[in-house]
Length: 340
Image 1 (tube, one colour):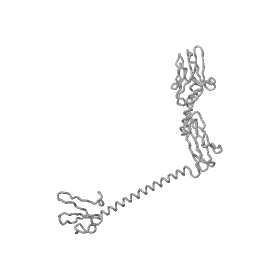
Image 2: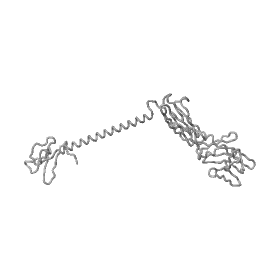
Image 3: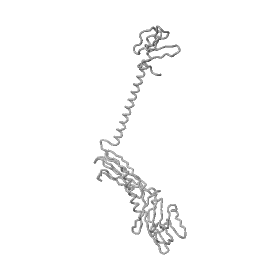
Image 4: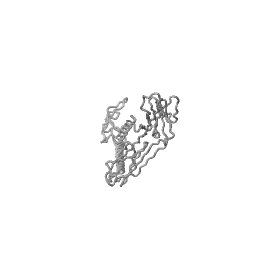
């Protein structure tokens, strides 16, 4: 929610800057225009578009103390002008009396002079270009002990330099927190700023606190500091890890117990089948056995006389027997042998 709010503020700031630069507000004979780093801006040299017979129009920047002006670009009816370093970044429109500048750099900020010569008169316009660059979403780091928290906010790629502002929630008295360090660094190539700020919060004076920081309209997320003494973020994390490890260990032990129990049950069934032997029982009316019976393997050989069958599995009945056909057996459902 805070990030969305920061983006909304940033968008609103852009709209305000655009509305300001659109009509080219006049103040003390200086036209103010605003451009964003990497973007484009139009520098108006005059609002008098009904004046004809333009001879030339020069756009330049004054040097220090008003001496040695630097030529930017221009137009001349009788000769071609060479803008040199601005060849690929500027374009002059003599009909509209404007110069377009793109790929804006922080070094482009400053005062521009437009010198316009007509056949009957000469005119000069001054334009002030202000350059801006949006700061990145601030990054917040928190380091706490039992007494205080050190909170650091950093943001980069912005222009011009902005101060970091802190927003405690709920609001704190200034005596409960103090700024430890504030600094900025300028990139030597892009000329953009990176800003830093660190504050120390006294945690002994109240409950936990939510903190955020903003710079140039870019707002950070809220971070919680000064946790209650009954527990800290590190304690909660450690407790969660230990609880997860215990739950995982219990799950593994339960799985191992179920596996061993099933293996032991399978071994008991195999032992029962191993201890039993299927033997033929002679029939008085046929050359083939009339029935088969399970008997303990250790009690009698296969050719032993008929006797009482092993009482637990019931005898198996042989329906019929023919020399040319395979015998058909009927097994009680309870004592079906396992399928190999």
